[in-house]
Length: 414
Image (cartoon, rainbow, N blue to C red; front, side):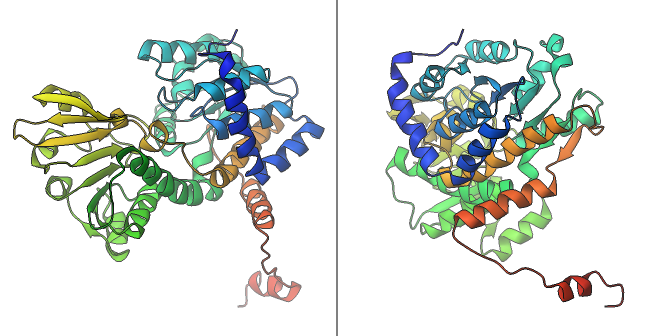
């Protein structure tokens, strides 16, 4: 029995999913293939990804391949109730609603994992974590899983290093067709979509502080620069810091950058990136938001404790007055700004990421019982298949090696 807000919202969700379908030719092609091949026949898939229209279409593609789907959201503020209703109307099982409390969110994850799932598709690691703690009775049914995010992979690596990971996980985020496009172009565009629609303020001429210069940070910085901002990057990795300098950005510690920023965007996957000392250095009107998976990058607990006053300034914007008399503003409660205050990544970008997800899940089924490693890279042939299909749908062609060139490159006498 699904647990959603209101089944009567389904028509709106159906329209959203149809728009995604029209703009995801890769997933459409996989849906056609899966409908014929039924690679997931007799299999159950438990999925936790931000529950909006693009995720919904992935679920329908997997269901077309014969899977019984059990679905929840990976963030209470990114779940769209009309999309959840549309999936239930289509015969899929959903346990999520927008604005769920922490207790409700945990209950939804628990219910999603109560059906003897064979494949786990995770975003941030909450499904895998619960399977290894309070849902150990379900472990024996699991063939393996796929992880969507950098944050989730960090958690998996820690579990694997401690000898705690009980089944193989495909590191989807590490695929070239995922992180090179989703993390950079998808995050870059969707973060600024979320900020701009929420604040309705100009970016040009202002100073943007981006914490973290991985692929997501690169995308956020690049888009900020294109909008006319001056960009400061904060980093802990000297190599990434050099990259940021050579890409034309200022680099300094957060304690220093806090004095200058008009906008702050955290994309590190770590906790306490912006803390009390930083808050107290900020200037009037500074706007803070997070684009990392969990709401711990900005120390919201401490900010609420030290604020002498707080007020809702606009939908999804809370203002905090500090003892200095300065007001600073936080978007989407410090949760993922591109999803909690927007619609997430563009459909064409998620077309590639979710194609990797779908084919990785198929790979797990095809290799059931023969995978010895706990952390598995996306097979190169899967990455290349997605790239070739995407290029074809973009209407582009590339060169191929001639037999002479192949012989030359494979020769030991270059």
